[in-house]
Image (tube, rainbow, N blue to C red; front, side, top):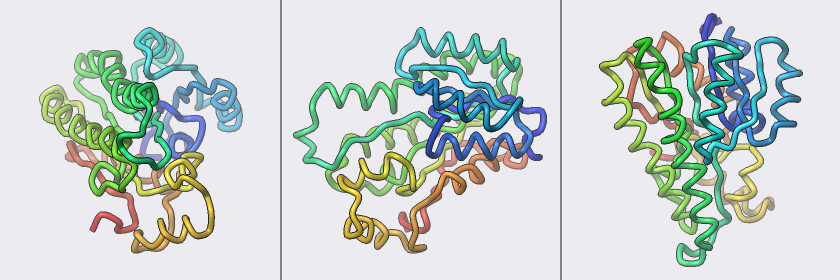
Length: 248
């Protein structure tokens, strides 16, 4: 029960890595807002988890929607102790010059702009209370890029740099900021990154991971719990690789 008494928000919390983090947080005693564009999926997970979970709709790329989330979360749970910026998208492998401009703009809006928007919405209250933990979900792609995913790689590199800069700026206010760098994970986005989900493609991806398996939402939930708990009170500005050794 390492998160007892904590109120948390997980964006993109209805599925994949986000759902893994939500489930672990609830198991560790937190009350959690499942914030997702897919309101039905968020609601279903909240029903499954019971009174400790609340589902709220959000478009993380929209300033008005994020502001409404902050107000609704405060009304539902009270002050937020933990913010997990998990919502993110990818694109299928392609030559860097072939990604459509509209898709590029959408990628940046969800992966990059969303963190700026949630910071504006939640950081002031954390600073006022002089405590809080922010966790940004980046990727090994921001450390060891795969070819033909250039713009996704770049967006996650931005997340890592933003995490470190936020950590330095917010440390005097008692707010910690860290990131997770997952390797390819068993989530709905896996097929997108591989281009096609075939035994051959999976074998090629797995060959780059020394531990020989994809990450799971449960792996991310455990790592997120540590970084957002008081056990990590001296840890800030870290981009923790949960990658089976891929970035070695």
